[in-house]
Length: 612
Ligand code: GCB
Image (tube, rainbow, N blue to C red; front, side):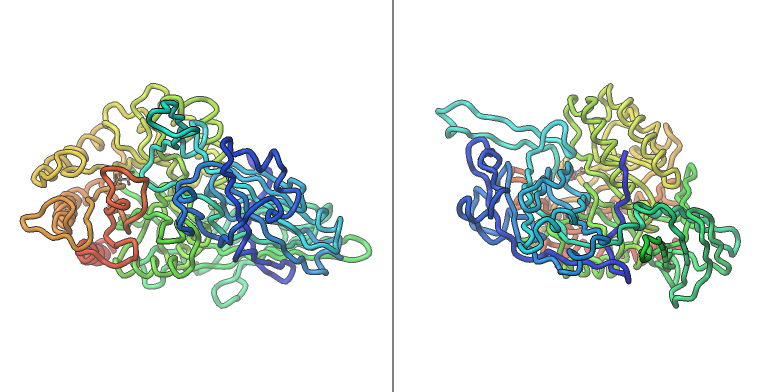
């Protein structure tokens, strides 16, 4: 389990943030065993003194930045470095904690400051941090040198899993040739994907806040717990404020329940004229360190809402919620999976244009900045962990499960307070029919419910309904299917019968609500044919329409949502089924609409009016 909080870094009257985004020195370790950087201790001096370095933007995937194919397809350690001038007041004040934080780096990271290792972290999609105050105070006259080594190698014990395969036939492959096998359908982009920053807190600080919300008639209930570190006798002031910064409730206890009269609930987009209403929970913590006192202030956005699941419905604030949304990727030209504000805002504008009220973070946790947008705009999120491509029986082993549980710890710790997050997804399309899947998913789901008893838990399946070993443990059945695409390609006429059977089978066996968590077809933008043929925009249209007809019959019964695969085209590994990436987007990778986007838009706005 995790032993500290991971509150999103924020400035306040007691906290400062210094972003380290921009150009870093970069060097890929192309030595045969990828280990030269460690053998020669590249972290001990300036990276530029160890050999040639290039400019690398942070945040960004490094893969598509240069013209070098061996860097695009690189597997192994890459090294990032930059120097930062730390404000003198941070150095001078022993009472200031200085924390180095990495939003995410794919996949395994080791961090040094002035040649001293400060932390390491496994997992490519969640933040990690280290307190570095004592190190920068050691030698306040030199700039602070931050070195981050990142390794994107995936093995059977990583999440997502992969394997490294060496090819020893020298009549076919050059010396040292190996490939990274992956079992998921998106490019294994790597590097420092999210912002790196330094932030400060006082020595006695607010380490974590947990809120759980509820309401009774017109009264909102905010159950909160504050955890404070570094203080012996902290006094606390917790104030809940509305949008106009008027105090609506307050307390001086470390935990308790705040009552909000005439509560304004957090509602999803299109379900209410004022979606995404957020209160602010200001936590003000004071501590007296003689001869002076310090204060720490942290303000958490809070949306008051409830989530419940029945055998046929998904309820938000006790009202049936129908997911009409998308599956996404963090993916775009040049920057790969690097966080990019113009892209994020554009995607929200496109989702709203479509009338999408929800998305799934397929197939890994997205940047917390994105969840904050969801909170504010009322976009509902199914928060998925990187458990994608669990196909090999060895991936169900103990070491893999232990890591998977740890990832859920980190994911729930980071995202537990987001009102937009209404459900956890612990995996996508695992080999759920294999015998070890039963214990694996039973344990994983129980663990997740232990971490957060307030949200339903699911995983996304493409297994046979009768043989799926984990389905008994999920709250909502999420099914992916690609009728007339991967099965019976070209035969659009099979969709009504096969999709009906799919729903009846799953509901008949489990009596749980069902989300069509993926469906779709590739369309190369600009390819046309009538009658429709695969890969044309017309074919994608008809697949969607035929699925929609069945959804309309079933959504009044127990189908509670439909998420198109995919919002936009995205990059994949090279292969014979992918024409420069996956083309199942309703938008192109450059975020221009295909014909299908207009069909979806019409439908989603109609659904918004019908389902309220
Ligand atoms: C799936 C996967 C998704 C793929 C998609 C496809 O079932 O969950 O990651 O991209 O199918 O297009 O093959």
